[in-house]
Length: 89
Image (cartoon, rainbow, N blue to C red):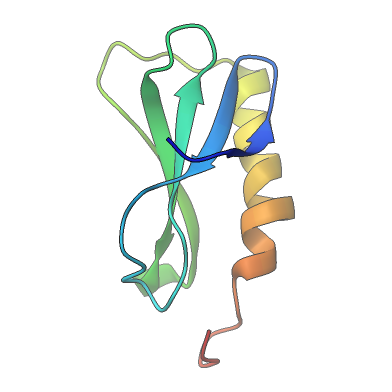
């Protein structure tokens, strides 16, 4: 397990232990604070040149506040690592 890079009320985000395959952009896992289960992720999506959110399984539900936290992370943290289209990482 890697150290959390951001923490919110019900979950925290940590860098995924995957090779940097998407132009050097890290992927992040969203981890439930109570169960420690990975409940989603944020990853670089090359066709759109931006970070995107994905949720695991059909049994995971997201409140508006949790989705807002995910959006905030993408804007504030992951967005720092995103470059404009055509620029190398």
